[in-house]
Image (cartoon, rainbow, N blue to C red; front, side, top):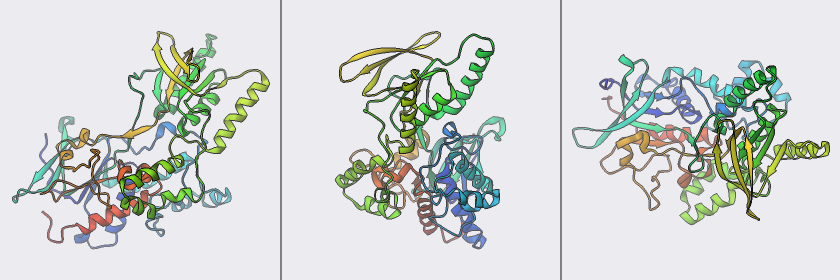
Length: 449
């Protein structure tokens, strides 16, 4: 393993999605406006070879579910030239976008905006760098002042590892796909996070099969789930394979519309985070339960209506390719050589039906990553509450064991302390600003070690 680099970073970001990208921009804007001795030394590590945000779900006509004003910077600094509007101006589409009269850009366009912003701070990021461990480092006084972050780095000699030392970490590794217990991924069983590349591969196979007159590569697809990703997957598969039957399986009676009404959306306001953080546990749980319909297991009304219209049209025409298996659950999946046998139970009667399918797509959401998997020994410094959740301060800094002056900031995985916006874009710019201000207030005033 290589020895630690001599530079000590004020903050080292683990992961470089939108959250740490927003922090990198805040650091960059600060450093451009102050003398060198007051600059924040920051670096970020990202295991992907380039910037990417939910690439597997960048469906061509899917739109964002948050306003473009909730971009990487505007809620923190409306004059920033890293805003979505500045991106549009540079791309020559500002007037065109304004004429569209919408607050919600295409998802692929917003991803391109992220890409544009990430390219401007690329000097702060090391891509293809996967963190494998984090080691606390004590000073002469016996206190933990730094962390040594060990990462696999393709530029290291012998494709080995590199060690970087930092006073603070900012963890923003995103969520990982959640699959039902016992699920085994394969070429026929996958998560919606893989939707686009998998469908592209299947579409190419279907085209070859059609040319060879050997039938179609996809005859039936099954989608499990009742949220936005599930509905989008159902719609996309139905459009991508015009000869295939698409079966949506979910335990509800029908898709539930997302509550995007103005008053309900105030749960995403920065002030709501303050209120949530200060509330007792019972109130926090009640707020989460009341407002989960703004984000979890819900679908945009427009998409619900479009799917219903498609299903009704097919019933009129006498050829139903879109099936809604509601109030149902998947009880068993058997993968055979040429197909899947998916056993679906209709819950009110217990009746079971076996669907012979070519693929099963799990739209079963995401879950926070376990800190210990990449923080290693450093995770043991995090103090826990009575439910074993990490205790986190209002500035998003984890509460650490006594004798620790180094810091660990969390961007994500803090719904229990900061509310429903923890994993969403709504407060990304504000949260990055709060973390930056906390870092700046803790910046050593003396010469750097």
